[in-house]
Amino acid sequence: MAQVLEFKLPDLGEGLTEAEIVRWLVEVGDVVAVDQPVVEVETAKAMVEVPCPYGGVVTARFGAEGTELPVGAPLLTVAVGETADGRPAGDGSGTGTAAADGPRDGGREPAAEGSGNVLVGYGTSQAPARRRRVRPAAPAVNGRSRAPEPVRETRPAGTPQAAPGARTGRMAPADGPVPVISPLVRRLARENGLDLRKLTGSGPDGLILRADVEHALRDAGTQERTETTAATAPAATTTAATPATPAATGGPARSTAGAASVTRVPLKGIRGAVADKLSRSRTEIPDATCWVDADATELMRTRAAMNAAGGPKISVLALLARICTAALARFPELNASVDTGAREIVRYADVHLGFAAQTERGLVVPVVRDAHTRDAESLTAEFARLTEAARAGTLTPAELTGGTFTLNNYGVFGVDGSTPIINHPEAAMLGVGRIVPKPWVHEGELAVRQVVQLSLTFDHRVCDGGTAGGFLRYVADCVEQPAVLLRTV
Image 1: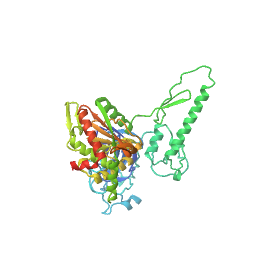
Image 2: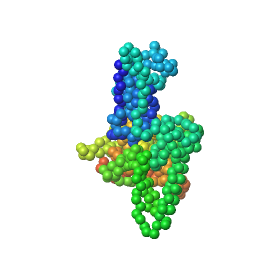
Image 3: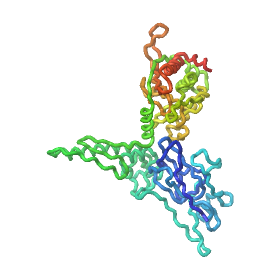
């Protein structure tokens, strides 16, 4: 007999307690293999594809796209094992077109066993089976098989199933799919209480784009201000404005006072995680900042010479990272954290270098493992890989945690300086401003040189100003005279 097993949202690690369903990768009736990804979820740290530890037929899904689920909540159910007539669950024989896509080994699926794995990359090496939609056979009654019962998706009442992909240019029907592919567009509409079914997309085949949502929100804001003004203008006396209740679709509450409007944005997801971490850093860490201007002309010349020699291009960030690892070898006090419970400073022999990356989802800090063992070429390649993954939202929790020191290149935003907030629980962060031509005294004469401001924010518990100043001065010396690095090779 087939057995229906329930797969729950697994613990994705790093203290995460909930995740939002971004996109279902399977539908009710699909045949899934062990460790096949079945849903894409977004946590406060990254986008994660969640694989199912069971092989069989999907009989139900729990939660529509955009729904937040706590860890341990049901994700889907899978019928595994053999049915009453001896066929494995999901066997397509005798089920019409589904049988045409069935396995080539006599029509039997491998035995359905749970792998126990919950994250992509930790499962079996066997490729996932092709998706097939079938209906599991019903148990036999009096020697005859009953017609299969239809399987239904379980989702919140009144919530339509959202299927990704392009649709027609007409407005979506009340009970049909919404032509939206991007989860960012869905989130923008949801957080502002906008019903996507009332929009007509300007994209191919009526696809709803981000510009369509933003245009609708601007129109809604103009209409709201107009209605507010019309309602208050004839009044002879002033009345207090009553805050509006949250929209039924889960959008933020808006309150109006005269012609002004206030929008409340939920502090959740990656924005909420950043807020919590920065608040904790400022609450727990007695930080201090020192900075220095440095002449980066020779560093830029060195990079140009390296790139002119052929081979992969070397990034400025990679050279700065190489300088950081050399400086941490001289000043290991800054490659550390503080164990407040044990009242101990924990120093790390290995440098796992985090770097700040701005994405559409917010600020993230990917980590380059064992940065102290990498040369400039390897660092460039790893920075490029992690940056692309950050922008695509595919960084894993492991790639976002475990850093021991952070490099923040805020110069890409066109600013000269900043006072970085330490990435808790690390002990220090080096900030780098833009490199721009400025007047500079060089060899006793005024000249135009490429100048950069370097800032170091450090935990005053792990060291005093002398150590922090020594670290920053060494970094500046390497920027001004890259040959200084040869002493540490």
